[in-house]
Length: 165
Image 1 (cartoon, rainbow, N blue to C red):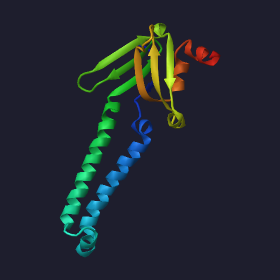
Image 2: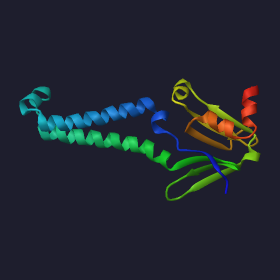
Image 3: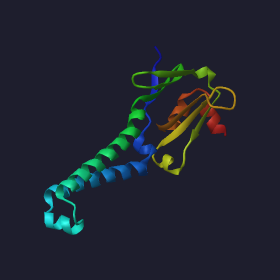
Image 4: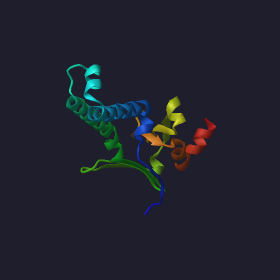
């Protein structure tokens, strides 16, 4: 059995920092609406939104919270069922929950690695990894991996190529 040198899931917050913060703020707004419907006086609520009852504020808060939670889970779930592993012998990408898809590339077949990072990805220590085995198209692309430079150093021949470039 090969020794695992690196293993990670893509990171949701690091891949979408502003969107994640926005969805969390919307979730908080939903909670505040539920609280407003429950703890704020009916006269105050009538002044804010004439014709809306306290129960409507609570219902609206629950709906907003539920929709924002579903959006966050839609981003989170796929990353939990995706794992990238570097062993002594291969690069392995596993995807899926019930139906698994696994791709393995032997280290000897790797001709090049490409790491793409924009400014906020560099600040958050994540990047998109493309693995080339031959030809112009990458054989494997993984988005949002933490510490992509570490991966380059773990693949034989790639650290020296990066240093000379």
